[in-house]
Every structure is written in structure tokens, then in C-alpha cells.
Length: 283
Image 1 (cartoon, rainbow, N blue to C red):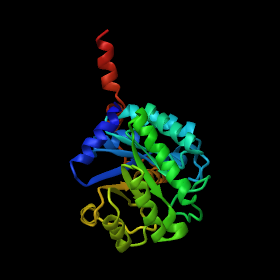
Image 2: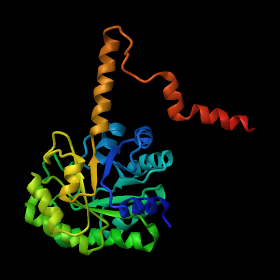
Image 3: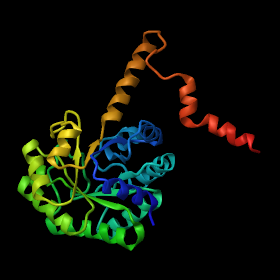
């Protein structure tokens, strides 16, 4: 049994609204866990930005994502959902992607219906694959789950931007029928569209709360009232980190030591120096 997936299923079975800050490396994932959040998501945008300083336009490889993912999953006990993008090819590629993500320690994997190379859903998606191909991707992911991977499948559509809301809802229904565990309609334009999605389509829904993105930022209580079960914050931590680093660099450039920082002892504890020293004492 996939233990991380089992923990994620237990969380979902409780019926609570889950607030999910998204991570980009092992350290950010550990901070999310220490802050008391019950799960996280490895954001493709954030990993591409932090690892390569490149845009989320399909430039990062599946091997690089898996390498980052292994480090993240090893650093925490909370369930981690991984961004599997388009599955990286045909249905056979999708199955292998899901299998690899399961072996890396992910509790779930997101598969989307954009054409390759894909791009961030809030930066002007123009094309998605046709409905039949999109369903084949989801079916392949579900088959990999049921054949032993065990990871929950998050099925995403970007059809709202490319083809309109009605087609996006049609795809969400088709993905639910194909056995997806969590449904993700990217970039609805307003609360009315979000409510239609949650009201008309069965299953567990995930909202994407991207600051300055296309979808309105709503508080978790309102998202729960609409019908969402997971609120993802894909770039909040990355944006905050960039802000803090720029602020510190400005202080250094002015000849000052930044004061808005954690102390050295906190950093030592965060990365496990004390636990490391305690381990050595046993030998």
C-alpha cells in the first residue's frame, strides 16, 4: 500500500476544508509541515523557478521534477501531491509518470489536458488536447493507481481558458466518470463559475488561489461554502521568499546586516543539526 496516499485519503475522508500551501523544495515543505498544515503540493511553476530560474512552460524535465520531489517527500511526513503536468507523452508515458511519482513518495499526482509543452494556467493557455485524448490520459493515470501505484489522481483541465466554461465542465464530468480522485478546474473567472463547478460536477474539488491570477482569491470558509475541499496556494511561499531575499539584498547593498531574518539557532534546528549530533552520541 502507498502509505502517503493512505494518509491523504484519511485526510479527505474527514470532510474538512484543507488549506494547502505549495512547496518548491525540501526546506519549504518542512516549514509547511512545522506550521501545522496537513498536506502540501509540489508546484511545477515554483520548482521550475527555484531550480532553474525558468518559466513554467514545459522546460523542466520529468527527471528534474522527480529529483526535487524525492527530496521533498523525504523531508516531511505530511502527504505531498506532485505536479505531473501532461503526463509527459501518450497514455503509456502517463502510466510511467504516475508510477515514478509513487516510487518517489508522492501521495498524489496531478495530470492535465494541455498540449505539450504546457504552461502556467494563469498566463494565457491557448490549447488543450481534444476530449478523447484528455480522457485517455486520466484513464491511464487511474489504471496506474489501481495497478499498484496507489497515488490519488488529481485531474486538471485548462479548457476554461482555451475553450470556455461549458467545455471545462464537460471535461470535469468526464474525468470524474473516468475515476479521478480530485478534480481541478483551472482559472475560473468568478465565484459564479466556481459555484457551477462545485454544484454541477460530483467529487472532491480543488481551488487554485494564485495571487494576482485570474481566479478571485476567496477565504477558505467561503471556498468551503461553495463546495471546495482543498485550497491550494501555489506561489504564495515562493513570492514571499523572493520578496524577503530582495529585501535582504537591499540591506546588504546599503552596508547593513538584515535584521528581518531567523537566527542561526533556528536554522540549525530546522535542518536537524541537534538531531544529527544526538544520533552521533549513540555511537
